[in-house]
Length: 245
Image (cartoon, rainbow, N blue to C red; front, side):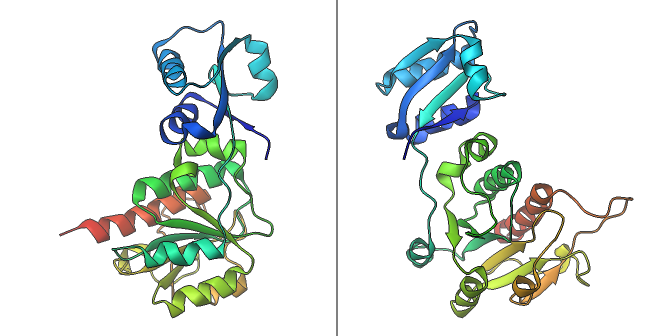
Protein backbone atom coordinates (compact mmCIF):
# COMPACT_ATOMS: atom_id res chain seq x y z
CA UNK A 1 0.00 0.00 0.00
CA UNK A 2 1.32 3.45 -0.91
CA UNK A 3 2.00 5.93 1.86
CA UNK A 4 -0.85 8.34 2.51
CA UNK A 5 -0.67 11.87 3.93
CA UNK A 6 -1.60 12.52 7.56
CA UNK A 7 -2.02 16.28 8.02
CA UNK A 8 -2.24 18.27 11.24
CA UNK A 9 -0.10 18.70 14.34
CA UNK A 10 -2.04 16.39 16.69
CA UNK A 11 -2.34 13.57 14.16
CA UNK A 12 1.30 13.73 13.10
CA UNK A 13 2.51 13.84 16.70
CA UNK A 14 0.32 10.84 17.56
CA UNK A 15 1.69 8.66 14.75
CA UNK A 16 5.27 9.69 15.56
CA UNK A 17 4.80 8.75 19.22
CA UNK A 18 2.76 5.57 18.76
CA UNK A 19 3.76 4.16 15.35
CA UNK A 20 6.92 5.84 14.05
CA UNK A 21 7.77 2.74 12.02
CA UNK A 22 4.79 3.55 9.78
CA UNK A 23 6.16 6.97 8.83
CA UNK A 24 8.38 7.31 5.76
CA UNK A 25 8.88 11.09 5.81
CA UNK A 26 7.59 14.32 7.35
CA UNK A 27 7.04 17.65 5.64
CA UNK A 28 7.31 20.87 7.64
CA UNK A 29 6.33 24.29 6.37
CA UNK A 30 9.45 26.33 5.71
CA UNK A 31 7.67 29.57 6.62
CA UNK A 32 6.55 28.50 10.11
CA UNK A 33 8.56 28.56 13.33
CA UNK A 34 6.78 27.63 16.56
CA UNK A 35 7.18 25.34 19.55
CA UNK A 36 4.72 22.67 18.41
CA UNK A 37 6.37 22.23 15.02
CA UNK A 38 9.72 22.21 16.80
CA UNK A 39 8.52 19.24 18.84
CA UNK A 40 7.39 17.48 15.65
CA UNK A 41 10.84 18.06 14.15
CA UNK A 42 12.54 16.67 17.27
CA UNK A 43 10.36 13.54 17.30
CA UNK A 44 11.01 13.00 13.60
CA UNK A 45 14.78 13.26 13.96
CA UNK A 46 14.80 11.05 17.07
CA UNK A 47 13.01 8.32 15.11
CA UNK A 48 15.46 8.62 12.21
CA UNK A 49 12.71 9.66 9.80
CA UNK A 50 13.58 11.95 6.86
CA UNK A 51 12.47 15.54 7.56
CA UNK A 52 11.82 17.92 4.68
CA UNK A 53 11.33 21.68 4.83
CA UNK A 54 8.87 22.54 2.05
CA UNK A 55 7.00 25.59 0.84
CA UNK A 56 3.48 26.21 2.11
CA UNK A 57 2.16 25.78 -1.43
CA UNK A 58 3.39 22.18 -1.51
CA UNK A 59 1.51 21.42 1.71
CA UNK A 60 -1.60 23.18 0.38
CA UNK A 61 -1.61 20.95 -2.69
CA UNK A 62 -1.84 17.87 -0.46
CA UNK A 63 -4.22 18.99 2.29
CA UNK A 64 -6.35 22.08 2.88
CA UNK A 65 -5.87 22.10 6.67
CA UNK A 66 -2.38 20.91 7.50
CA UNK A 67 -1.23 23.32 10.26
CA UNK A 68 2.19 23.39 8.67
CA UNK A 69 2.95 19.67 8.83
CA UNK A 70 2.17 16.46 6.93
CA UNK A 71 3.47 12.97 7.69
CA UNK A 72 3.54 10.34 4.96
CA UNK A 73 2.72 6.97 6.47
CA UNK A 74 1.34 3.51 5.89
CA UNK A 75 -2.18 3.34 7.28
CA UNK A 76 -2.96 0.50 9.70
CA UNK A 77 -5.21 -2.01 8.04
CA UNK A 78 -8.89 -2.21 8.86
CA UNK A 79 -9.51 -5.32 10.96
CA UNK A 80 -12.02 -8.04 10.20
CA UNK A 81 -14.17 -10.54 12.07
CA UNK A 82 -11.19 -12.86 12.49
CA UNK A 83 -9.55 -10.17 14.66
CA UNK A 84 -12.61 -9.41 16.79
CA UNK A 85 -13.07 -12.70 18.61
CA UNK A 86 -9.48 -13.02 19.95
CA UNK A 87 -9.67 -9.41 21.05
CA UNK A 88 -12.82 -10.07 23.08
CA UNK A 89 -11.44 -13.31 24.49
CA UNK A 90 -8.41 -11.47 25.84
CA UNK A 91 -10.34 -8.85 27.82
CA UNK A 92 -10.27 -8.90 31.61
CA UNK A 93 -13.27 -6.60 31.97
CA UNK A 94 -16.78 -6.49 30.48
CA UNK A 95 -16.43 -5.45 26.83
CA UNK A 96 -17.65 -2.07 25.67
CA UNK A 97 -18.16 -1.90 21.90
CA UNK A 98 -19.34 0.84 19.59
CA UNK A 99 -21.28 -0.34 16.52
CA UNK A 100 -21.80 2.13 13.67
CA UNK A 101 -24.53 1.19 11.21
CA UNK A 102 -23.78 2.76 7.83
CA UNK A 103 -21.52 5.68 8.81
CA UNK A 104 -20.32 7.51 5.69
CA UNK A 105 -18.89 10.83 6.84
CA UNK A 106 -15.13 10.56 7.56
CA UNK A 107 -15.35 13.51 9.96
CA UNK A 108 -17.99 11.68 11.99
CA UNK A 109 -15.98 8.46 12.00
CA UNK A 110 -12.85 10.29 13.11
CA UNK A 111 -14.75 12.03 15.91
CA UNK A 112 -16.36 8.74 16.99
CA UNK A 113 -12.96 7.02 17.13
CA UNK A 114 -11.52 9.86 19.18
CA UNK A 115 -14.38 9.68 21.70
CA UNK A 116 -14.25 5.88 21.73
CA UNK A 117 -10.58 6.03 22.68
CA UNK A 118 -11.27 8.50 25.48
CA UNK A 119 -14.20 6.48 26.85
CA UNK A 120 -12.32 3.16 26.92
CA UNK A 121 -14.14 1.42 24.07
CA UNK A 122 -12.48 -1.88 23.17
CA UNK A 123 -13.41 -1.87 19.46
CA UNK A 124 -15.50 0.03 16.92
CA UNK A 125 -17.49 -2.10 14.47
CA UNK A 126 -19.13 -1.33 11.13
CA UNK A 127 -20.10 -3.13 7.95
CA UNK A 128 -17.85 -3.18 4.88
CA UNK A 129 -20.55 -1.99 2.49
CA UNK A 130 -21.57 1.67 2.24
CA UNK A 131 -19.34 2.77 5.11
CA UNK A 132 -16.23 4.88 5.23
CA UNK A 133 -12.82 3.33 5.79
CA UNK A 134 -9.71 4.74 7.44
CA UNK A 135 -9.04 7.72 5.19
CA UNK A 136 -6.54 10.56 5.78
CA UNK A 137 -9.45 12.75 6.93
CA UNK A 138 -10.44 10.12 9.49
CA UNK A 139 -6.86 10.04 10.79
CA UNK A 140 -6.69 13.81 11.11
CA UNK A 141 -10.00 14.17 12.95
CA UNK A 142 -9.29 11.17 15.19
CA UNK A 143 -6.03 12.78 16.42
CA UNK A 144 -4.32 9.45 16.99
CA UNK A 145 -7.33 7.36 17.99
CA UNK A 146 -7.40 5.62 14.59
CA UNK A 147 -4.17 3.92 15.66
CA UNK A 148 -5.25 3.07 19.20
CA UNK A 149 -8.86 1.86 18.84
CA UNK A 150 -9.41 -1.27 16.71
CA UNK A 151 -11.72 -0.47 13.79
CA UNK A 152 -13.39 -3.69 12.65
CA UNK A 153 -15.35 -3.93 9.40
CA UNK A 154 -17.44 -7.06 8.91
CA UNK A 155 -19.16 -8.53 5.88
CA UNK A 156 -22.54 -9.10 7.54
CA UNK A 157 -23.17 -6.75 10.47
CA UNK A 158 -26.47 -8.38 11.48
CA UNK A 159 -24.80 -11.80 11.69
CA UNK A 160 -21.93 -10.36 13.75
CA UNK A 161 -24.42 -8.82 16.17
CA UNK A 162 -26.07 -12.22 16.56
CA UNK A 163 -22.68 -13.73 17.36
CA UNK A 164 -21.97 -11.02 19.92
CA UNK A 165 -25.28 -11.80 21.63
CA UNK A 166 -24.38 -15.48 21.70
CA UNK A 167 -21.24 -14.46 23.60
CA UNK A 168 -23.30 -12.66 26.24
CA UNK A 169 -22.94 -9.11 24.96
CA UNK A 170 -26.09 -7.01 25.24
CA UNK A 171 -26.92 -4.60 22.43
CA UNK A 172 -28.34 -1.13 23.10
CA UNK A 173 -29.71 0.57 20.00
CA UNK A 174 -30.27 4.29 19.68
CA UNK A 175 -33.62 5.44 18.32
CA UNK A 176 -35.46 8.75 18.52
CA UNK A 177 -38.78 6.94 19.03
CA UNK A 178 -37.56 4.73 21.89
CA UNK A 179 -39.73 4.79 25.01
CA UNK A 180 -36.75 4.65 27.39
CA UNK A 181 -34.24 7.42 28.01
CA UNK A 182 -30.54 6.62 27.96
CA UNK A 183 -30.22 7.47 31.67
CA UNK A 184 -32.76 4.78 32.59
CA UNK A 185 -30.64 1.97 31.11
CA UNK A 186 -28.09 -0.18 32.93
CA UNK A 187 -24.88 0.05 30.89
CA UNK A 188 -22.47 -1.68 33.27
CA UNK A 189 -22.22 -5.19 31.79
CA UNK A 190 -20.91 -6.54 28.48
CA UNK A 191 -22.34 -4.03 26.04
CA UNK A 192 -22.43 -2.92 22.44
CA UNK A 193 -23.87 0.55 21.76
CA UNK A 194 -25.38 0.61 18.27
CA UNK A 195 -25.60 3.97 16.50
CA UNK A 196 -27.54 4.56 13.29
CA UNK A 197 -26.24 6.34 10.21
CA UNK A 198 -26.32 10.08 9.61
CA UNK A 199 -29.89 11.14 8.88
CA UNK A 200 -31.38 7.64 8.54
CA UNK A 201 -30.86 6.03 11.92
CA UNK A 202 -30.73 2.29 12.44
CA UNK A 203 -31.72 0.00 9.60
CA UNK A 204 -34.64 -2.28 10.42
CA UNK A 205 -32.47 -5.40 10.24
CA UNK A 206 -29.95 -3.97 12.72
CA UNK A 207 -32.59 -2.49 14.99
CA UNK A 208 -34.26 -5.88 15.32
CA UNK A 209 -31.02 -7.32 16.74
CA UNK A 210 -30.91 -4.83 19.61
CA UNK A 211 -31.97 -6.03 23.05
CA UNK A 212 -32.97 -2.52 24.15
CA UNK A 213 -33.58 0.85 22.57
CA UNK A 214 -32.89 4.21 24.17
CA UNK A 215 -33.10 7.86 23.22
CA UNK A 216 -31.68 11.16 24.36
CA UNK A 217 -33.94 13.86 25.81
CA UNK A 218 -34.27 16.76 23.36
CA UNK A 219 -35.84 19.79 25.00
CA UNK A 220 -35.29 22.37 22.27
CA UNK A 221 -36.46 22.64 18.69
CA UNK A 222 -33.88 20.39 17.07
CA UNK A 223 -35.06 16.89 16.21
CA UNK A 224 -31.70 15.14 16.50
CA UNK A 225 -28.04 15.60 17.35
CA UNK A 226 -24.99 15.10 15.17
CA UNK A 227 -23.97 11.42 15.12
CA UNK A 228 -20.61 11.94 16.80
CA UNK A 229 -22.13 14.19 19.48
CA UNK A 230 -24.83 11.63 20.31
CA UNK A 231 -22.20 8.88 20.32
CA UNK A 232 -20.17 10.81 22.86
CA UNK A 233 -23.14 11.20 25.18
CA UNK A 234 -23.98 7.48 25.05
CA UNK A 235 -20.38 6.38 25.56
CA UNK A 236 -19.76 8.69 28.48
CA UNK A 237 -22.94 7.63 30.22
CA UNK A 238 -21.69 4.06 29.90
CA UNK A 239 -18.30 5.13 31.27
CA UNK A 240 -19.92 6.97 34.17
CA UNK A 241 -21.95 3.94 35.19
CA UNK A 242 -19.05 1.52 34.78
CA UNK A 243 -16.65 3.59 36.90
CA UNK A 244 -18.94 4.80 39.68
CA UNK A 245 -18.45 3.22 43.10
